Length: 181
Image 1 (tube, one colour):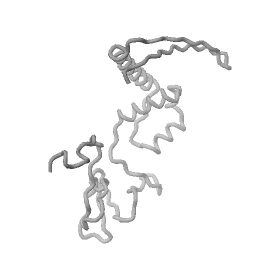
Image 2: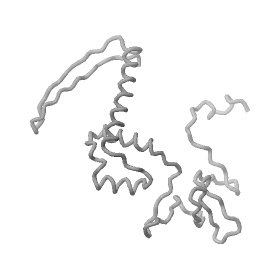
Image 3: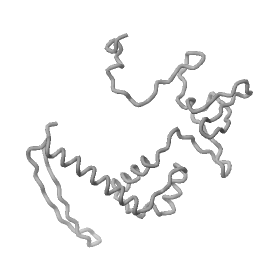
Image 4: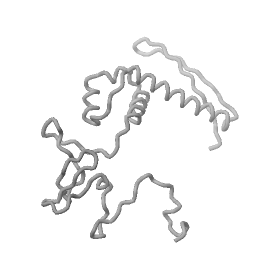
């Protein structure tokens, strides 16, 4: 059929794969099974992970696959993909948005949290995070300059000064503009 005959053809791609029907044809197959090989003639039915080759029992009522931890009886949820650089960028955004000090990454609580959330994540030093935050700043600065050059005919700049309860002085610079949107 032509692309215009299907309504979903006009939608932007979502980045997710379509799930396939299972052998019965009536239920959708989870994308998780793309990471496992079913071991034939096993009772109960067993699947082997394509990445770590660990065998798991195939329980059709499970909503999430879990591997036993190597350290004890705790269970660890399986992730499909890990990207160290993506996690570092997300950490830099967290530091910036929540106005956390760079030394946050050296705290014991933060290290424990990261080890439980994503054991593969190698926590960068505070200096590395500072460089990552500065890199994000430079990228945003370039984007803003491009926006002001292309889309704004007038920009008004205002300033404000104040002193905090801790007797710290602050100065802000705010740019107001109207774009075409």
